[in-house]
Length: 356
Image (cartoon, rainbow, N blue to C red; front, side, top):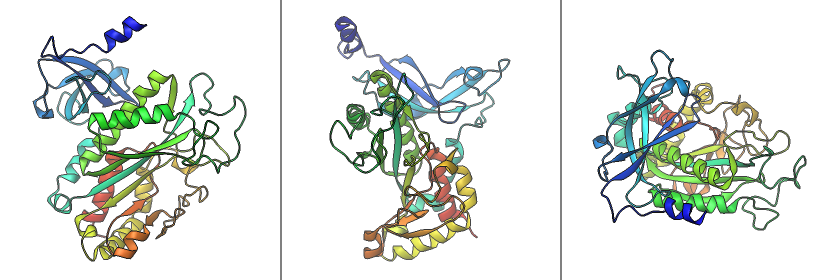
């Protein structure tokens, strides 16, 4: 094993200019991530200068066997924390050979929204709080939970410390540092309310880059749990009963909201969101109805609400924002398995472009 580790950690920089690029894309379920590697003649920082590639879409439920080729286009480059050196991770989106985006390519439409002049002028910032649950590989039961049983009730686990309260911290810290190495603007981590559940935050990030960075952070986390022998879940309600679900609270501001008098713009934006509540809920993640029950720090899925410092509301405005009269707000409705391309662009479209 020591020899294997030595080979895995080989530094190629002294012997070749060539680099390994891991091309990463989203599979047919809209949540599964796929990747494969290729050798490139040297490092590159501009994704538009990287070669397009293809994959067998019939094996990812994105094409039929008689016309299976799907084209992947590089969109964002990150440093590779696994191979290190000058190697890279490349976030891609997927197209049919005709050049049309395939149905699971949500980045394409998001980029059109973020490229609109009115949206560009507002410089939308996002901070996404990605919750997730770690499971034991063999038992399919959350990490740290007794097999076939339950831990003590919720209470001591949120931001908890100790072997009886924090389960999987080595995975979480490895992910934190790997994201920083990759160039992701990860801003923090914490243990969540349900034992075995954690959260990382990405942001503030502007526009389409928010989706790129959250997806890449998810990919890196999946790779780390693979190494650790744990299973990663983004299910919005991983354990039924009196246990918290998992969300992806999305913090949002525009230039107008961040400037003096921004609280008025925030109030107008929240009013717009209230009028499109059903449309947003439909796009905010599969199975979200199991999480948004009005209990466990959630609002009821059928009713839009907002409040200052209210974690039981659909939208929460922070005390600092209220006090300063400007800032940001938090959309608490997105589930942990939401597509960040969809959620971020939809919020921008509703609050900036939509005219009720």
